[in-house]
Amino acid sequence: MSDSELCHQTPDYILLVKTRFKLTLTEYQNDDNLRNEFLDVIIRENMANYYEDTCKELNWKIDEDVLNKMKHENEITLQKLESSENSNLEDIEKKNWREKLEFFCKVGDLDHATNIASTIFKDETNSTSIRVEATFALFRIAYIKNNVRSMGKMIGEITNLMERSCSSGSNWCCRNKLKVYEAVYCLTTRNFSRAALLLLDCIPTFESYELLPFKEVVEYTILSGIISLSRSDIDSQFNNNGLLQQALLTESPKYREYLYSLYDCHYKKFFENLAWIETELKRNWLLHPHYRYYVREMRLKAYSQLLQAYRTINLNRMAMEFGVTEEYIEQEVARFIASGKLHCKIDKVAGMIVTISAAGCNRGQAPTAKCDRGLIYQNTIKKGDALLNRLKKLGQVIDY
Image (tube, rainbow, N blue to C red; front, side, top):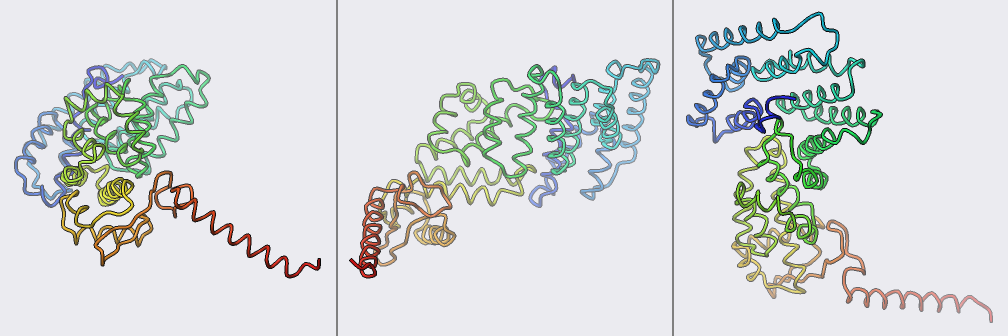
């Protein structure tokens, strides 16, 4: 077990992944405060390889004196680790591979870290728990490298190892940890519904501090849950979750405001919060590729939630609800109607949106008779007319 797991602190080399990504964005490239904060951590932790790679990526000038000093400190630390290792021990579980792996991850030498973890994982003489631990480390290395494909592969390897294990129900800690890792992978692949279910399940027993802080788990739960869960599921899964509510109040009040602005139908406030969420997603490497999709789907969800309550609604009234112009709402609704995601029509003459109740309908599919009592009546009439026409034609060909 790593130090981060024991002291419930996420390692700096994991936290710096987000800072490093922010520095690649145009709006942060000239942010001296962020850059200095980033370099202070690197120098303090003697992250020599990480420093070299970042300078090459961001076209920073390398300070050779600082780099040589960090390398010298790392050489001393590595010599201590190697001298403490007893080469006569054949049991890999008693060797200090964990300390060496953590050291190489810390300094940014991910190639050596990968070799160590891969060796442990591929050695079938090791116990399943040891091999699973090494595979979790390979996932974290892929996380640092932003290698989504490798992350998915490691999830599959861990799952297979646990399924083949004889003690299939005994290693509860690893299974709970796997939920967090899989949820992070699901976020990178836009599988928000699966991520929300996994995160909600592991929040009460979260221990994966070596991958991300608990605060981020809470925030990811809100982001994935609000877009994928129905209003009733949010009520049951979020409102009745005391630990989640406490974390939102103390650590992430802005995310709580974002959640309940939509849940309580405060649409103008929701749009303001959604604009803030968009900036948060832009600078988060996990969700940056999906921020346009996410914001678009959340606007659609807000429109659908409002329109479900009305048969008709004035365009001006809807614009006032969202705090935008009438032209903006008209263009937005027209775009979603054209793509088949909103089942309504715009009466431009009357300045109204005419809609049907979407209760019970799957968004993205054409509404069925189950969606509305009026539609049931109309559908029954149409089917009755069709039946009468068929009987009439049948009567014409039958010789009585």
